[in-house]
Image (tube, rainbow, N blue to C red; front, side, top):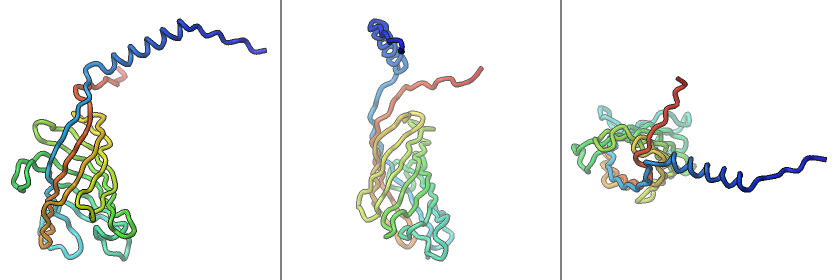
Length: 197
């Protein structure tokens, strides 16, 4: 016959109190904050029939052999490094880059799967990033993707980002895209020392 287990309710209660105390100590100095950011992507896309000599910021890197590599062609993968500016004008103050991979993920060519980072270089958020992921339909006026994480001032970020094409010039494949980001994140979150010494 197996011995009976005797649980001490007082001991269990004290263990729960200790766990709650340790959790509260680990979160001291943190504050959940909501931040709204608007930036503009200055996008120049290379593709079939685009003129040479331009400083492209989005280029196709691979696709289905024998098929046209284009944003509306299933299986095409693009790499992007768009400048982010404070205002709409290309000469506006730079605030960072949007760097990532874009894949035409639907058979009909209308959905692009985005996996990208907003990498900030401006004084306020320098060195911080926001990580974006999701399906974006270019048929929609406003496209929305998830903010799934962040670094620096945006640790543990969660939220969403919207993209809206403000201007498109077909002859130079220049596109101005407004990006609005709403995120919740922790500020003043200290880093722990994970060294073995």
